[in-house]
Length: 433
Image 1 (cartoon, helix red, strand yellow):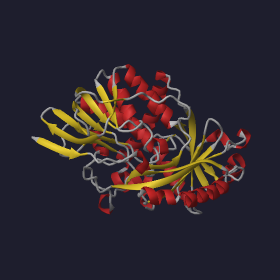
Image 2 (cartoon, helix red, strand yellow):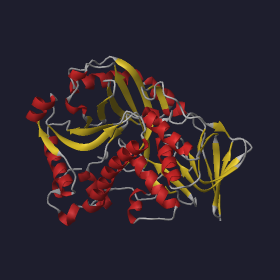
Image 3 (cartoon, helix red, strand yellow):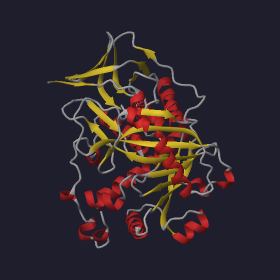
Image 4 (spheres, helix red, strand yellow):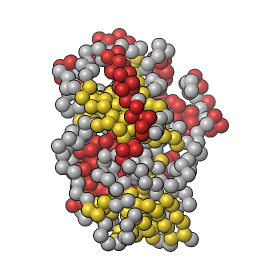
């Protein structure tokens, strides 16, 4: 049986506007044009953070790998990331439990925590210089009634065996100098420079024999035990498996109903006086709509982002930059009054989200031997690491039941699917949606 899939031609400029601060003065990986048709165990379409993690993991398994990208790897959606390596997903454990039941939701959260830890160990073992720093996260309520919900969320996390402590309004004021009704302070997260991490991983894969090809993949043709990647030139690549790691440039498939595209805006301030940054330089994120998140950098800047909306047209997204950055500066001043809000870098990017906050990882329906690896949400890099491990298992014919939690064809969560954790758990019955 034969199947075909077109791959749309979208440039990095369609995904990202502006200039982020990542990867400055670093050596970019060398990639060469395709000069002949080639054959590999695995062909990865996309050289951003997801493709780089997959390439490293698959070459570590001894597989022959080719990474295909039409532009400099990492300068698409990866360059627009704020690179907060969190284990907490965009969907609270309480809400995820309403969708899928407590046990399944808790298992997803625990796997996410293990993924952050695993990525940290990988960076250390490979000695990748990417400005990695372990960080705690501070999840803040943005509403007067949010403190009660945070307490309920924390109780569920403790029940799942996850770390964290509740910080009351007085504690936040005296210890963090942050004016919010409450927060959850949790260890186990981290921050990186996403471009340095991507390029470092690709260099490791290249030293193991991987090929990094400058080419534009136009179509996939799956037949029998092989997949052919057709290019815009005279040559092609054959592989036993193809991995789609095209970030937020969507392949020519019908995306599941739970998927949608959105855009986010971010800025990096001028360097701050390091003595005037918040305690422990924690990763800060807020339960607000639109989303708000902040972190610091190795050179003492503050990165703040959010203001998400459904603008995906590149020109419209760019036109909104002045207004969105002005709003982010105002929100930064409200969050951290000591901040010097002058802007050195400002950018925006289009990202993918799902209605349950989980990634899309696994076989592409109706395309045998083609796998997708899309790590979505605020902890997308965490999910990308998880995707690399899952893809490695799948191409070597290893399967786990929990892989279905992230399947592309999983049903969209909705009112008909909602559970109460533990079968009528009184705590969950009080958690509002």
